Image (cartoon, rainbow, N blue to C red; front, side, top):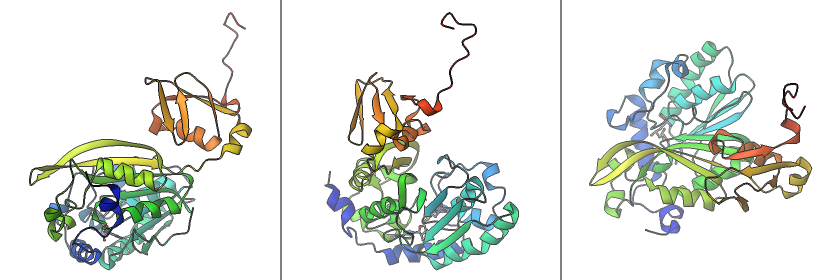
Length: 324
Ligand SMILES: C[S@@+](CC[C@H](N)C(=O)[O-])C[C@H]1O[C@@H](n2cnc3c(N)ncnc32)[C@H](O)[C@@H]1O
C-alpha cells in the first residue's frame, strides 16, 4: 500500500482538475448513462425537484437523507452538480436553515441556479445558494457549517488531502460530514489513474477505504464509521463499491467536561474503545463534555454508549415499585 502522502497530498495523477471540469461541462448538458449509479432517493425527497435536475444526478448514494438533518442547520454540499442533494437538504433544514452548493463547473451551476427558483416556489422559502469554487479551497468561512455532504465527488479530486483539510476548516466544532463515494477494493494502478475517461467516470480516482479513513483522521476527524452500500462495477479486475462514510469534528473541551457533569459508559461488546484521545472501558463511566455526549448519543453510535446526564433524566414512575 502506498503511504498516505503519495495517495492524497500530491497532485498525484496525470489527470488535472481542468480535465474533470471539461468532463462535467458536457455531463451538465445531457444525461450521461455511464455516470449514473443507483442513488436510492425516496419519492418524497424528490417531489419538489424539477426533472432537469434529476436527469443529471450523478451521485452514488444519498448522503443528505442519511445525515439526520435538523431544522435550522447549515449544510454545505461539495460538488453539488445540478443541485439534487442541496434541494433535498433545503426541505430538511427548513426555512431557518441554510444550504450551500459548491461546484467548479459553470454549466452545472447554471442548471442548479435556474432550478433553485421553482424549488423555492414549491417549498415556499428560499435557503439555497450555489457558489462557484473548488473543493480544495472551499469559498466558505471557517467554522460556519454544521454538516458537510458530498455525493460521488471526492474521488474526482487530484488533491484529496486538501479536500479533507477544507472540510474540517469549514465545520463547526461538533459538526459532521456524511460522504457517499466510490471506494476501490485495492489501490488503482498508475496506468489506470492516468486515464481521463475512467477518472471522470468516478473510477480511477477512487481511494481505498484505508486511505479514505487515514486522510480523514490526518485532518483531525474522529468517530469515523462507514457502510458499504453496493458493488458498483468491476474494471480491469478491480472492484469499485459505493460507501457512505461519516466523521466528526470534535475539538477537545476538557474544561467543559466537569461543568457538563455528563458521564458516558461504553456498553460493549468489546473490552474498550477509544474516541479521540479518550479510552472508554466497558462499564466504566467517563466524564464528557456536552458535545461529546450528543455525539455518543447519536445514531452513528447505534446505542453503544449509555449516558448519565442529570439534565436529561426523567425519574421513572415509582408508584408501583417496591423502591417507591
Ligand atoms: C459525479 S458529479 C456529482 C454531482 C452531484 N453531487 C450529484 O450527486 O449529482 C461531480 C461534480 O463535482 C464537481 N467537481 C469535481 N471536482 C471538483 C473540484 N475539485 N472542485 C469543485 N467541484 C468539483 C463537478 O463539476 C461535478 O458537478
